[in-house]
Length: 443
Image (cartoon, rainbow, N blue to C red; front, side):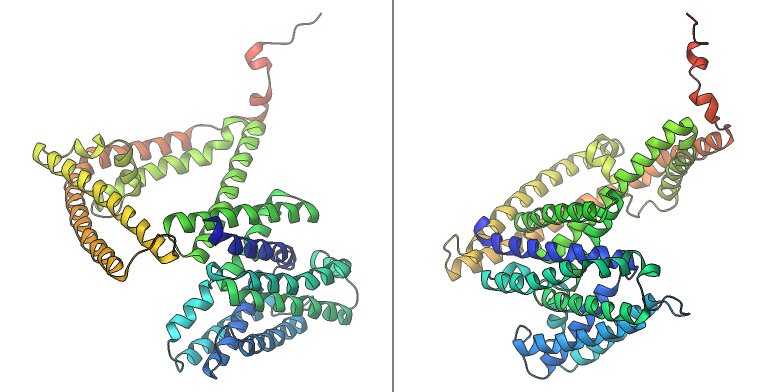
């Protein structure tokens, strides 16, 4: 595993180093989608080069993309003004939409256009070579040094635009920022794809802005999250045989969701300490109403996907088997055993197939064909067993709608009304210790 993933991991570290810093500027400027816009402009340049007969990874395609990106950088630098009826984010959105539409029109005239679009979106970071990683690092190093040397005017423009100075100087420094930003995006999109580049730019910087106050603290937090998510995403991609770029992007989404939940829990705990349990009143009403809504949906539409009930049945199988007859219960038990056996067998053969593809396990062409045929046959058997389970689940849902759905509706509605009518606890009453311990004794 390490033998095949060390180069992609180092590439992810290089992306983290430069994109997190640029992401802090992007968040401070409020131009969140400038990365997507410039990446799409670069993708348009690559697409035109592809239509002209140049391979996607060729030097000619890179220069096409760079020229288009620098043009977009100049447009964004000129469009930045302090007082204007048209916000810069609108111009960025227009550039993105027009570039994407133009790329679709160009791809429509090129052979294998769908595969080209897919490669631009998700990239091919798993196949990156050590030489490409070195080239990327050598390109980003002088850009990082440039940003360090001119950090003061760039930080002033991003974090204090009103005191940044004359408009002409601001536009000049803006062009420096967007031009260097465009070079980074153009190079990154070729290897990692639009989605992964956007994730590295925005997600660590967003989480860092929520967790740290100073620019240095945000940079350290963003770098740390980028390294951890890169390692976790690549490991998950290898373990479950998933597309690498998409897996890392989803891992970023999981991290930002975890940060949001943690901050919300911390805010709720702080509010509870300050205002007592009355601070949880809205959350309690929403929770009880959600319970009632879940029950109402079960009563009205039992055939839809009820995720909470699926989780309950997976945790407590009796929640479903209780509503099945004896024959249905035996059929379900046999189907569950068959599914477990088929899944284990599919995982075993797929692992052998991956090892053959990576060259770590020798396999003849005939053996590979047999593995593909076996996987197809076993997958059909698994689909049949899962169809049996879905049929039994539908029968259980038809009975659960009355025995579970109606009580949940009553519980949720009654709980919401009870909490809503209950008077809120005052702040002083919650904070006063004499209410519980009596007046303080005097010596």
